[in-house]
Structure formats: structure tokens, C-alpha cells
Length: 245
Image (cartoon, rainbow, N blue to C red; front, top):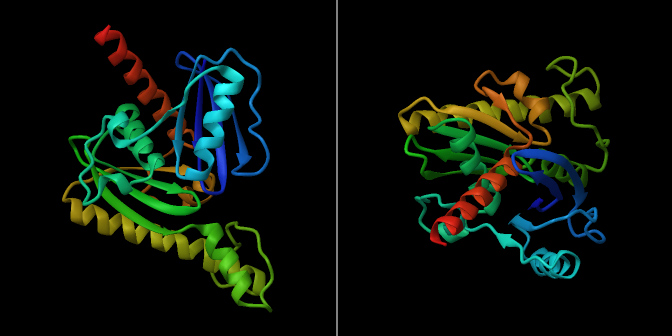
């Protein structure tokens, strides 16, 4: 059984795969407590991590509990051509998402990921990673507003009843929700113009289902995109080893 792990700055998502079948997935807070992993018959572990401090901890955990050496995704392991000034700077999660959108959907593509940061990843028609955009995540913006403005209340992130708020909470929610809708629409349009081709636009991440219905440019929501990408990379690595043997 394959254990796939995506370690993000805020949350860590884990999943168990048996062949192509996703058996179970769950989410824990990154860096808080031990890894909550059931004692399954785990034969392989593949990891996408953007938190270096967690890597050694996870490596030791896998060795101790499963006698397995986890594979950490890099551009080389992902098998993806990365057209960046410094390819080593790209986050593993963004590589994994690019692999998943190419193999499970189509290219050219833009992946919008609603994570700690809101990222836009651009893949050309050859399936090459061309670059992207990083903006502050929705939750980060809300937290920054709370810290900077003492009189403003804490609000939930949700679609307000109308754009023009009739009270402080509705006004803040409108600014967050419709502000991010405008940001996402504007960046997709600018990226598309620069690409010179109409891309397939997919959204992922925890807040994707909330924002995507308001953005016609987003064609698909797939909250399990990163997990699918980890599976595809694992399968490719396994096939390469079998062919070499």
C-alpha cells in the first residue's frame, strides 16, 4: 500500500492508495504532534514537502514504523521540464500539481491552488512547467487584517449576501471574497494573454469549492489533485525501476 503525504505550511494531507484506488485521505496540522497514520501494510511512501523542518521527522517516523525510506519529490523525480531561472526554488507541491493536471487532464493549463499562499502554476502545451504567480493566501489576508485593525471583528471566509456590505462583518467578507475573485480572474486573464493560448484552468486547495463557482474562467475543481500527482509520480518511478531491472 502506498502512503502519499503532502506537507504544507499550514496543513499536512495524507492518503492511502491501493493501486489506483484512494482508500482514505485525512488532514492534520503541520508540525503539531506526531503523524496520525494507521498501522496499515505500507510498502512505499512518497512525499511532497515545502517544510524542510518536517522532512527529517517524517523520514525517521517512516523508518521506525514501516521500515520504509520515503521518497521526497524533486523536479528530477517528478520528470517534469521546469523552465525557471532557478528550478530548485520551485515548491514540490507545485511540481506535483503540474504532473497531475498534465496526466489526468490536459495542457496547456493553469492550476490555481488555494493554500497558505494562492498560487498560479502555468504549464504549456508540451507539458512543461513555465512559471507562475504567488499571492498571499486568503487566510493570511484575513489574519493580517485582524492584527492590523484592532476594531475590526474576526470573520469567517464565506460569500456575503451582496457586494455592498450593510454592516462591518458583511463589508469585510465582501472585501475578502470579491477581492480574491477579482484577483484570480485578473491574473488568469493576464496569464492567458501572455501564454498566447487558451489554457485549461483547474482549481485545488481547501477554499477552491468556495471561490470557483463565482469564477467562470475556472473549468474544474479537484481537491485531490496533489494526491493524484503523488500517485502518478510514484507509478512512473516504479515503472522506471521495473524497466531498468
